[in-house]
Image 1 (cartoon, rainbow, N blue to C red):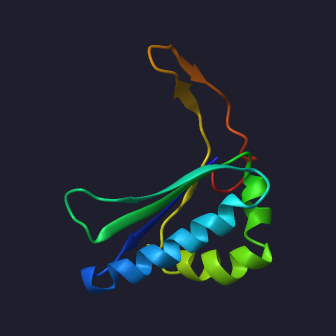
Image 2: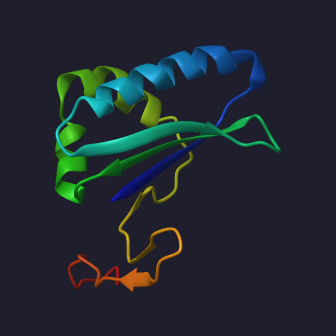
Length: 113
């Protein structure tokens, strides 16, 4: 599962934001089910940042948000992200030079199909 949290950060507070984002990333990285993560910044507009993390499953991500260190470091930062969907399930992958492999959605049928 991929989680992308986008931020728009004024340049005068970018250094403080990056410090907080590093602490949030470290707290998330310590949780079970975490696979990898990055703090990235847009090349064409340095006010735009994104915290990208990958998780074993939606359940491990949701449980990670309940961890004490995550609640005090990551959750306040994540609350400042752009208000938009942030959790995505992989439906197709391709290794370098490989074929595209598709999988069915794990989403339950419901009103948000």
